[in-house]
Image (cartoon, rainbow, N blue to C red; front, side, top):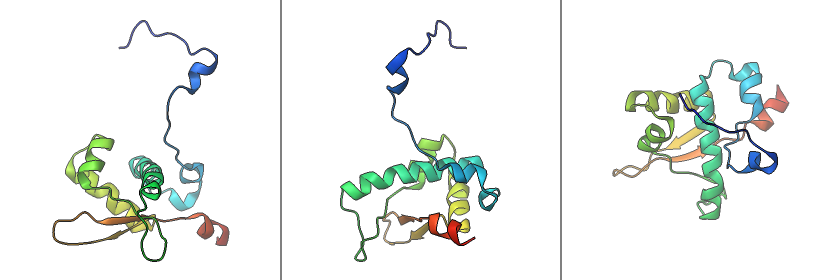
Length: 122
């Protein structure tokens, strides 16, 4: 147990960087089948997209892609290989990401899909 912790005062509450997870992933029935881990991973991937955009990782159609290896998932999610692969399959299976295999031991290109238009159509 952590002891001797202090309260946050005024602007101290803004001292951290935060990952953003869209609220709709937690509230909309379309995403009810996703585990919390998959929702968290999607938030991490959304965050990685800003770095990819800054790095110019765009395909020929101007779509942003990321590299997010199984090892990245394991490290950031604090899980083993099997769990990491399951989380990626969950996101892929529901359509929140699309993985493009590049072969030759190179990491998959991952497209983090924009679900907002699909929600408007429902």
